[in-house]
Each structure stands twice: as C-alpha cells, then as structure tokens.
Length: 199
Image (cartoon, rainbow, N blue to C red; front, side):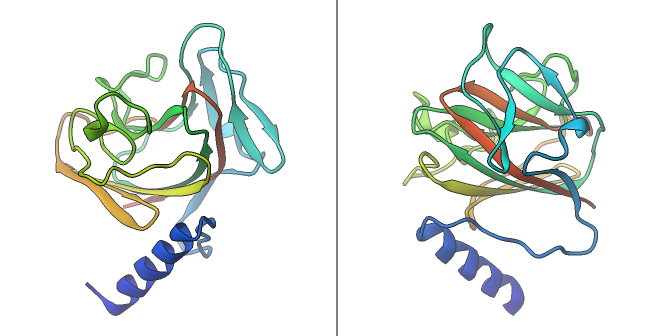
C-alpha cells in the first residue's frame, strides 16, 4: 500500500473514531450527485418515503407502503462511490449498486452495501454486501453519527469501506451496470453528500 493511501486511511479512521464526518477534497474526476439539498434532480423517487431536503441534507423518516428509494437517472458500470450518511440506531438503509430494474429495487436485483445495525443476521448487516460478502465481528455500527461509505465496483471486484475500514470484499459478476439507489427502510435516514468517479 502506498504511503499516501495509508495516511488517508489513518486520518479517515481517526475522524470516524471521534464521531466526526470524513471530508474529502474535490479530487479530479469526481462527480457530485447530491450535495446538501442540491442534486435531487439527479434521482427518481421509487416508493412513497417522505424524502425532503432540510438543514443541508436529504432525508426520510416514514413511508406509506414499505421501503422508498432515491434512484439515479443514470446507469453506471465501473466506479468508486462516496456517500456521507446519518442513520438512527433502529434504521434500515443501504446503498444499492448496478440495479437491474430502476423501478423495482431489491437486494436480489442489485448489489446492496447494507446499513442495518439491528439486522437479525448481522453478518450481512451494516458494512456487508448482502448475499455476497459478509462482514466479520466486531460488527460495525452506524447509528447515531455521520458515516462515510466508500464503495468500489470494478468489473467483478466489489469492495465496501465504512469509515475508513474495509468491511466487505468479493468477486461477483451477476450485475454489470445499472443505476444507484439510496434506501429508506426504517427509522431516520439522512444523506448529505454522494459523489461518484467512473473507472
């Protein structure tokens, strides 16, 4: 590992341990999909979650008919994704990748980097890629603080890094491209930054 990468991970981990947000510089090649309350026009709403912009973020707290999603209008194949999010302890959320049907989002038709501290099977809870790459003990927790997911999808290689710590890696070729979706499933879910860099 390069020295610059080690330094980046060290600083990221320290910030996460202190409960602070991880702040990234505006690196070349990164495209901002959502920043504060701007960028909602890059997404379609699927489901009836009460997504709203306020206080420099976009969030949801309820839905009339099950999970709700913000789904990118564009499809992506190989990329790095950075997402800053806050969830309550009881929240069920996730970042869905390469979704095959933009109108029907599931963890069987997309890759899901999970955010679900209270999932009954914690091996695919927060930090895991559901059905593909389990997370090991001690199981990470995201509730009650700002967190940063860094997710890479490069061909069949998948990797999830939560607050500077690699939590899941796998090789899987089910899905080659598709939209990205942000989930509200339960509790309070907030997003304030979503950036992508095509590979």
